[in-house]
Image (cartoon, rainbow, N blue to C red; front, side, top):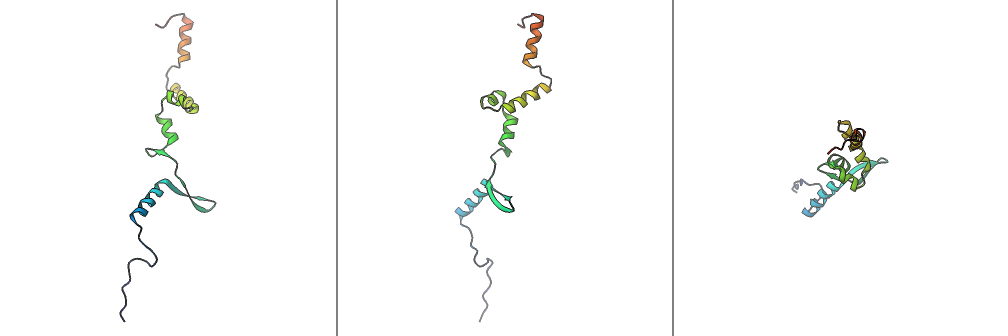
Length: 106
């Protein structure tokens, strides 16, 4: 009796087909594994733009008109506070200066 050579694969394991590999890669991109109550659970990944969470991307890149049109009033307020802290003159302060002198600015 001759001994049969052992195979490199384990018994019971099979290789994935190309379609199964694509699906596995897609699932890895869409879901993440987290622990909830001591168990591993797969949940959808939070949406990102250029690798950044959507809220952070909007806060960094949106202009005040877009923030106002889309109802991001908290971010608009933060944007205005940051602008005022930089030393820019607020429009209300500038108009009151012209009213005191009774001069027309143009």
